[in-house]
Image (cartoon, rainbow, N blue to C red; front, top):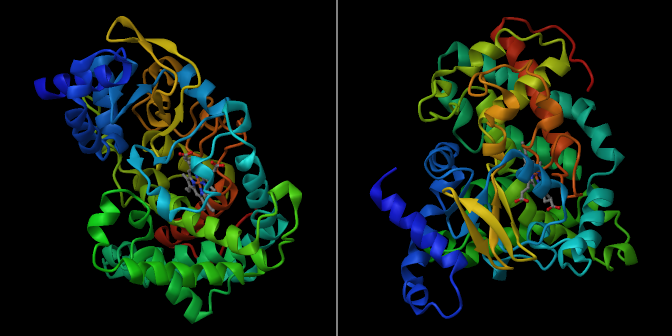
Length: 441
Ligand code: HEM
């Protein structure tokens, strides 16, 4: 952190809390807008956020908002209704390419919302994540996908070519994720080559997540926006015709008469921004392909999680889950989220009480709460999957353990089941064990 960062912090703070008659603050707006854009990338990383907290305290200004990292504050913000903006972590989303039902940007009724979030979230919970999801994740098709992945891991591991397991889109982990998630969530047949090809093309090759993010999208897709639009429509049609969405009743008042097409477009945006990226990030962390963060003054970065994975009891699903949650505690796949203040409020910043108006963007850094020494003790930067309160305090799925304001990630159970299954199967390969049955969740 440097002198320039201090200036940036002051300017960001001024931008958030200036009086309406402060002409100076208005003149500086172009500069603060630039700083906001500049900070929005590093503000996704745990190391950058941790450095900010060391320098400025629990509350600090960055990337156009106030970060409130106190453990109890984060917990409260995850449990109370949230008002939302078009943001994914600190990145600005492209509203014009998102459906009106885009859940992550809708406010809850208890925080100024008009009931849209409740209606569309109910459709996702009841139409997409119904009991058939549990049947599919336990059936022979899902098992075969896991077994095939383990076989691929075994061959590439023996040939010392694990980079090939993690990198290409059309094989290894990425292909597995595309097939498994679309099978378990939508019932799309993983042997349907045409559908899988379209899904891989849109989500991986054309970078569907980046397409929804402002500035990046306009730069990356300047020349082929229509190609991306066509690929998006194709995937939306595949979702609409899937066993899950095709059985939906379109005249459900509870879902504000949402149509199959609307639900499929919502799910395209959700799979682009949450459903593919989250599992891919967490899977690579737990499989040891994405190191833990180098927190300032700590040794977390030198921990090799795969060495711990090699020692846990693979017949104990609970222990495997705790291993996954501890990896996620030290490196959240999604480090933060946000809400919009519904009232003016006061917060301590750098030892001073500062007033903020209604409408202030408040960041909710789950990652920082998960490192709080006053909660997790002096060994918080170390790996201990048997630590007290690991599961009930976990914030990686936008909840506090199983406590939620209703906005808990609906993909949590699928992601947890899949990653535990993968850790068991690949872990057995690593230990030269191949013939033991996998337990049920
Ligand atoms: C390891 C995997 C995953 C992680 C760590 C994860 C994490 C999260 C987090 C942190 C949020 C809150 C984001 C925010 O509000 O800004 C979220 C929301 C969401 N996630 Fe996941 N997610 C994962 C997998 C999935 C999957 C597979 C799906 C499948 C569809 C999914 C669907 C959603 C949806 C629909 C929301 C919006 C919830 C709402 O606002 O009502 N996620 N997820």
